Amino acid sequence: MIHDSAISLTRHTLTYIIGTTVTQESQFQPDKWPGPSLVLEEAPVLSPLHETIREAHVVLYSLPGFHIELKDQRERENNQSHIMATSHVDVPGEPTETGTALLETATGAIQGFQPINSIHEHLCAFHFYADDMTRQVEAHHFCAHLNEDVRQCLIYDSPEKDARLIGIEYLVSESVFLTLPDDEKPLWHSHEFEVKGGYLFMPGVPGAVARVDLAKVCKTYGKTIHFWQVDRGDPLPLGIPQIMMSLTRDGQLREDLAEEVEKKFAVSFEKERENRKDMTGPDHGIHPLANAAGKGLKTELREVDIPPATSMPRIFV
Amino acid sequence: MDCVEGNNFFKKSMASSDEKPGSTPVMGPGPTLPGKATTLGSKLVDTGAQMLQSVKPVKQMNMHACTFALYGHDLSRQIETHHFIQRVNQDFLQCAVYDSDQPSARLIGIEYIVSDNIFETLPPEEQKLWHSHAYEIKTGLWTLPGMPELLQDPEHKSLTKTYGKFWCTWQVDRGDQLPLGAPSLMMSPQAVDIARVNPELVKERNSRYGVSAGDAKESRVEMDEPEWINPNADYWKQHGKGFAIDVVQVEMEGTGALI
Image (cartoon, rainbow over all chains, first blue to last red; front, side):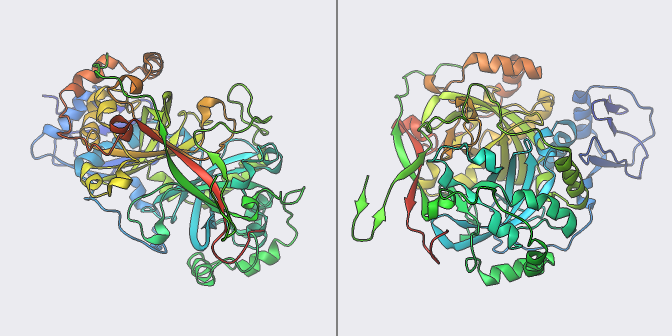
């Protein structure tokens, strides 16, 4: 019986040690990805052997009286006080089962995550629906540079572990924006007002450091699409995608929302405004077609013809 | 186009997911991204941010799946996708979808996945935007790169019964160098001719990841088929219709014009 194997996954130098009296946790940090730690009790000390993962898998699930406690290292990050999203509704569903969680801890340790490992920046800003300025959402952007001129961001409704993934934003520099077709430009919005106004900020980063990057963001244009209308209490991502816009002048942002965010993140928009006085927007001024050319934008669903399905489904070879 | 005179309501479709945007210097052959290489300055700010900020929501994604998807308005357009997945609970997952697993990967959309239990609670109008997963999982189109097939089993057993809703924001397969137009609804491969993935694409993907199609199918063929796949999902199958999204200009509700 293979009850005395130590598994070495050389790719990430992660070792599953099975059948030892190790009572303290082993912690592994492959690259920057926090790995799982194993706490194993009540088993004899045995020398490590190299075996296949297949066998380890069998062992983990078949040894009687064998206690495995898998703690996700990410659980032990600094506990910030839990900040509730503005309209937090629980996502329907049963709690994750142990078997599933276990497997996903393994995938988290073994697989590669390069595209999301490139996500290094957290920006907080406000979006409103392109057809209804009164519906406004606090939007947490987690951004990666594709190059100096183009960024891509995942948008969540909070910066917490239980945040809902609600949308995507792309940011481009002015020079790239100007190459867009005229029909495309209205879907994009400028960032000058919200950056200069202090409403777009980088939580946790000292002002002086943040302003280096924000001065660049000030000159960019963004395209934001949301898929989950959390502001109307949707428990799931229902409906069709929504084009979103950003603040372009005074009087748009709801005061209650502004105050709530200022309090949550201990920032003052007014103070930041002072500090950002010298920032400038796009060199050629805000393009007249941007920000939906001053109008609203709405998405609609349309049925289209596609060729009919042919009769007999064939077995996939 | 409809025009309602009395309300000064002008409707013009600015962008549609099933139409090609007008030609522009931006769109050339090949997938070159316009713009300059990331400067050292930006990288330093990134590093600074990285040290000071926690990107907790992003760190919750702990699974990478590679599969194939079809455009909902044109099933012949097929793309390889890389899903970075967070399981929110036993019935719901949220995925960031990229066109590759490299650092240069482009973010091309988001997919949400729900269990059959959740799916059955959705109204029919909503259900028609979703697609089933049984076929792509059983045939090994969906795979977790780097994970031995046996370890993938528990996940696949639960995923075969799920439904997905996948919006694509960047049509890289048609050569768009930037995310243009309206988002597209995507569909999943099915056991019907027009929705089968081109075997060449699959072969190339499998050899790149050392996936043996044989292995996958062997271990998965024993998996239970869902007893029933809701006919409202994979809408095109029963109705021969796909979906496109239009973006139209309207009057803005709220406190006045944007500019």
